[in-house]
Image (cartoon, rainbow, N blue to C red; front, side):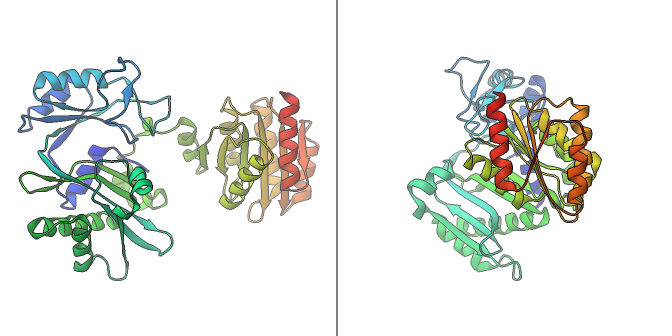
Length: 399
């Protein structure tokens, strides 16, 4: 689960992380009013969407030469002008795709006199099973570009959960950033507090870019991106209240209501599978046969008829879907239950695209019988390879 920058900073501030003063605003007038609470004379007006690259982004409704989604303002009038440009308009960045995202919220913060910018992030190192603190002197830039062009400028410091954040970790962060004296102490303290926030919120990622040193010798978090482990949110009811559903894909939002793992993709073959590994293999074999998956959809091991019906409807709601491949291995889940859900959904939505189904496992013959006697044009498959070839052939024949 992702949250907005202003929410991330408010959350990190509770852990003692140094952030500039700032306020969220939902209207132009509110943006102007909250700017009056800041010392000034420099303000920063930031579009709040779940995507990076906002400063370099462009608004669809504004001329090409217009400034991006992060702007400096030196007066209340400039705050008003920036807010007017941003609110309600569509910001396109390198991470949103060509469709962009509508800006419905702003974050007005106090400006900072920046001396130097750094990068700092926390995430889980899957290779070691530890929290990894990634730091670089190249703050304010796309970390992917730094990793590609100058990988030697990125340092990873792994932290063992058994010991937690230790003084030597803080010293390593400061050394990697080239900081000494009081700034080294600030860097160690900030890194420690960010680690506490990472563990305390069950975060998947905390990214600070930039972590800035001001000309007054203060270390500040100027931008923050925080994402949480969705599987841990039952422990954090307060964090769930920060969820902005308007930032989520409607189909993915609908899928979450039925506890379905769904991610929309750009292909044309809809997939419904049980098990993440099997879903990935299904997507791969579709590509191997010359077409592309339209989604990742894992119905899980304990799906019932209603859940399968909902999954089917979500797939068919995508206008790009030209065919559907259902690949089920029935262990905990029974093939006849899957078959009943497929038939019910296909009849309810008036199925008009080719459908290939491969079933294997518990009650497989009962499931195949249900499909065969459904009166629907369902193409059975013997195995995954056969299923992929058949769905590609059916889609090409229907084209």
